[in-house]
Length: 535
Image (tube, rainbow, N blue to C red; front, top):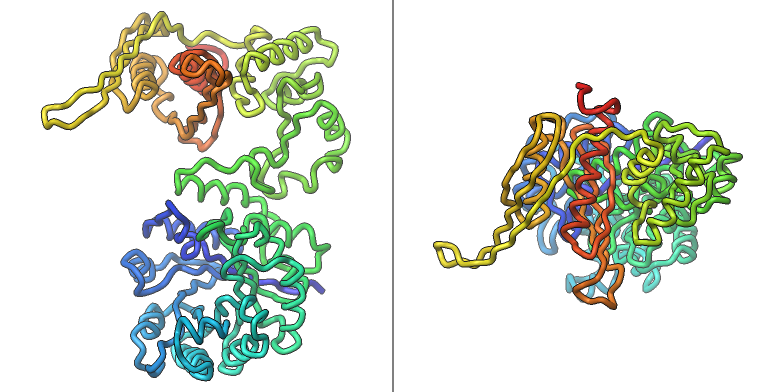
């Protein structure tokens, strides 16, 4: 019979410690509900009393159908009774179903950081757990720096766990706080700990400072722990925490059915969506190479690889992409063969025979363009447009007669130094010729605004299109400021679909405009494949 593992998410607290990340109350509520929907057992909401955001979150907690909302805090302070400790009382006042309290388990920290007797630290742990249990149904002890403490003084580190265990804590969480422990050490230490504290009362909380947080979590499970903590997309302080987006499918799909994690097959299929939801909230581009859920996780570029995958996906894919809500993707590049091109064409609804002479023409066209500097392995939308033009399958939605961009740097009326970009564009579209002027935050934004003004009367659906990422690469650095540049633009719309386009030119504005036009044409083809008159 499969053993039950419990998943504990700390995104709303540990993830909020990531440099550049700041969650609003609405963000935290949305993330908590998304975590609940995929079957996570515990959701750590934050630290009551630590800041106004966490106080507001716990004052109006989200409605959860499955997960146990958990507050985080610390054990009582030295020299105070647990009943009269303000911090501990603030934690209990949140009235969450569960509470996780952090305390020292490394004798070095007790001696130097706290400056108290080691027995007093044990009493702090024991008293805090006992006091919390008078009001909170489930209490956990987070053993800070446990692995460092165990390596320095195993007897004392174990004594800290036993103090919490004997006081009634449901879980004792082994924390690799500085992320410096390696998998072979975690396996050995956890194996020794379970001889003293039952594994079904132990959790693992790994940080990623040696890029081993997921590995450390998996070996801890193998050694006996039955609660696994982590964050979405590995968010966290410094190098981050164990990535639940990687851990969940690894535990569900890679352990021969030995463990039950409370996540159904249907919920597992929502992982890619969950990962990208967090990126959207943080206004970050998803990591293309992210395990399981990245855009490139099941992307195949070499022609031989594509042929092999088409015969048997197990050749180069460790799991079926749809199991985690992702998709297989055949990349077209200068390394591509006919198999890549045919597979990619099929993905966009273009079915051609392998001996169709146009396939060879398209392969050669792609290779010639990539020799110039175009990169279609990361700009699938531009590839589709190239293919449809070669196959004479792309309507003309608009023509740009000309554009002009001016950038002015001057002092305004207040004496502040400002830079103003202005674009003028002449366009022919369904409503006839149009000349528009727009200002923007930089020349590309000004061009985008002017082009939209010209096209929106004919194509109102463009109003929902927005740029989410913009990358520039210098292709000929030896030419210094005269170098050829490649611009890649990632766009999205109100459907949540993302697409990437590319432009090449010695003029960075021209390269950006090419990518921008491709992005708009790709959107128009999706909404009007039969041409401009389609509504």
